[in-house]
Amino acid sequence: MSMMKKATRQAFGDEILALGKKNKNIYVVDIDIGKSCKTGEFSKQLPNQHINVGIAEQNACGVAAGLATTGKIPFVSTYAIFGSLRMGEQIRQEVCYPNLNVKIACSHGGLTPANDGASHQCIEDMGVLRTLPNMTVVMGADYYSTKKLVQQAAEIYGPVYLRFTRDAIPVIYDENEEFTIGKAKKIKDGKDIAIIANGDTVYLALEASKKLEKEGISVKLLDMHTIKPLDREAVVECLNVGKIITVEDHNIINGLGSAVCEVVAEEGKGKVVRIGVQDQFGQSAPYEKLMEINGITITNIVKTAKEMLK
Image (cartoon, rainbow, N blue to C red):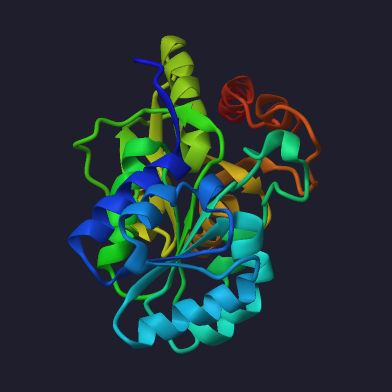
């Protein structure tokens, strides 16, 4: 595997420019951090489809909702912490309640803001937004899958939250791989243990599964890029394996792990162990260190799998 690394926020910047050139209805609503959210090229090349409202997140949401009522497809772009929590009420009242075609595209999801500290590490966003009716919640695992998922988000109708990494993460997919919002991507099939991961943790789960397979443990691995609507069928299929590990760069409360547990509890069989942010705020530290503090590591995935199989 080539260890090419690219931040998924860059995938958004590249894809939104390509989409905007093809479709004049695609707009970007920036909140004064276009440089960080990679919308600079879009604003340069498509100035008539670009609006910068300044540091005013709640206003940006209203502007986007207004654009959507006229048939435009606005992408509001900011950091995850602002796009989910500061804009939360506006997303509920102005986007989800009237079910408008607004996309919220956020960089700096999870622990990847690293040295920026706890205030910028958004560990609650996907959980908060999955509780809103009409909202779709998505995080691509790498550069290429993110490009495809951004394209999909532009094509489907309705509110979509897209979460990107600030840091560069390994490229794991081929650029021709196809992705469908709401449908899990099966990376491996196996019979001993099932691992369901999303975003920047898919790579860790993939590496862990290779290690486990070297020791004769058969792993079923899913990239659950959409946590709402969750691919229920894919989770139910994992119940044939019986033992499930979820891995996410998000609070283990109300994220991917919780979504999977809801299905498992309703089906009434199977066991789940959740690996993710341990309901604690981050700190200013390198990304890998923050992941380690929370047990979101290849080593811990391997160890957890072995413990479950004892």
